[in-house]
Amino acid sequence: MSGHDLARELIAKHGTDRYPTVDSQALKALEELGELAGAILKGHSTEEVAKEYADAGLALYALGDKLGINLDAAMADVVRAETRIFERPQEPDRFLQHVAELRAVQQEAEAG
Image (cartoon, rainbow, N blue to C red; front, side, top):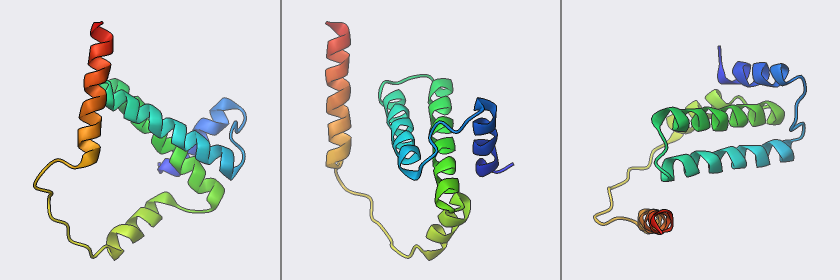
């Protein structure tokens, strides 16, 4: 069963498509990605992160259905066409530094 099939099954289980437009489904996908990032950054259990990961994936597959894009095929096309070669940065990039700072602030807030 594909991710698209699973997303359609979930919508059918709900009895209605709560995000019937491309715009509303795109916003739902962003919401789910935010929840996934939050679970990771807060150090939630693997099971909790897996649930959020699955929710985000299902939202992206549902968005693909609304756009008429097969997500698996689109990802395969991107991987096949990729020609860039990257070198690992010598020092942590700004994003990772920002994440570390956010975690420190959160830990201070939880401790205080």
